[in-house]
Image 1 (cartoon, one colour):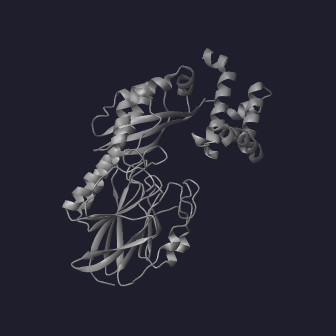
Image 2 (cartoon, rainbow, N blue to C red; image 1 turned 45 degrees about the vertical axis):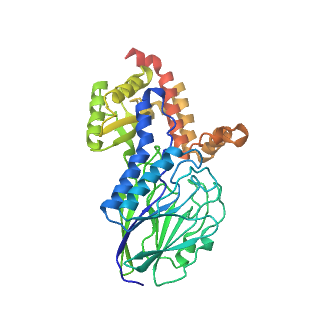
Image 3 (spheres, rainbow, N blue to C red; image 1 turned 135 degrees about the vertical axis):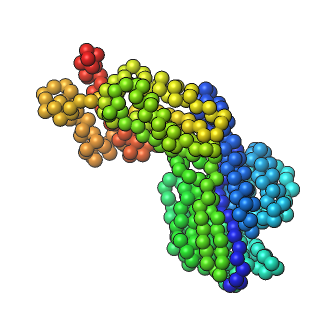
Length: 425
C-alpha cells in the first residue's frame, strides 16, 4: 500500500431542509430554528473539512429529507460543494432512500470536485495525491426509495495497493428501529477486503468494527426529534502507513435531551421552578440551543397541584417564555411529562379492605403479571393495525411507554379515589 498520509471526513444523513412536525403555532420561532438547524450543521461540516485541511469528503446518503421538491436543500448543498472546490476538497456522494435518484432534481451544474455514485452497480473512483493513487472510493446510490436487496454483494476490491473505502446506505444487522433498506450483515463486510466501510442510514454514531476494516456509522449531522438525543456529527479520519485513526466531531446546532426533575423534596411551585432553572444553567450551550423533554418524577406534595390544579401547563408556559430562542444558548422545553405520584403509603392501603386497596391490587397485577400485561398490550396495539390506518402516521408505543401509561393511569385512579381526602387537607 502506498505510504502517503491523507485525511477525509465521513458524513451521512444530512437531511437538509427537514421539516419538523409536532410543534404548535405558538412555537413558530423554534420551528424555524429547527428547520434552519440542518443548514447550520451542514455549514459546520463544510467548515470542518476546510479547517482540518482534509483531502476529501464522503457522504453515505440522505443529503436531503425528500427526494422531490427540495430546491432549497439542493441549492444549499451546491453552495457547500463550491466552497469545498475552492479549498481543493474532493467529494464522493452515495444517495440513500430519502434522496434516491428516482426523485426530482433541479438543473444544477455541479462543481468538478463532486462525484455522485450511480445506481447501476458499485463504482470505483481513484483518489490521487501528489500524482499517486492513494485511495479507491467505491460507492452505489439508491435508484428508488424502497431498496430491499443487499447492495453490499456487488462491492469488490480490485487492488490491495491502495486504501479501499466503501460508501453505502444500509441497515447492518437488520435493526428493527430503522427501515430495513439494503440490508446486510457485519460478517459480509468483514470478508470483503475493504479498509473502511463508510455507512449511512442509522442516525446514531456507532463503530461496528474498530479496525481492519473500520465499519462505522457517523450518525446524522443534526438531530430532528426526541428519539435522537445527544451529540450529532461526523467522523474525521486519518490514514497513515495503512493504519486508520478516527475522531468524532460534533456538527449539531440544536441538541435534543431528556431532562428529569424530582418533586420529592420540593414544597412549592417556586422551588420547582428554581430547581429546573438551575438544571438549565448547567446544560445551556454557548452556541445553538437545547430542546428538552422534561420529566417530573417522584412522590411529593406538588403532585396534586400539578395535576388537579393545572400547574403543569402554567409551568411549561413560564419555562418557555423566559427563553430568547433567537439567541445562542437557549433551552426550549419541547414537552413536560408528569411521572409524579401522591405522597401516600401504598403498603398501608394494600392491607386495607377498601376500594383503594382493591384498586391498587388490580393495578399492581397489571404491571407485575407478564401475561396480564401482554393482554393489555395486544388490545392497545390493535388500533395501530393497518386496517385502522393509525399505524401509518403514529409509531406504536414501546413496552416501556405502555408501562409508563399504566403507571400514570394508576396515579389518576388514586387521585380520584382520594379526592375528598386531598381536598380536605
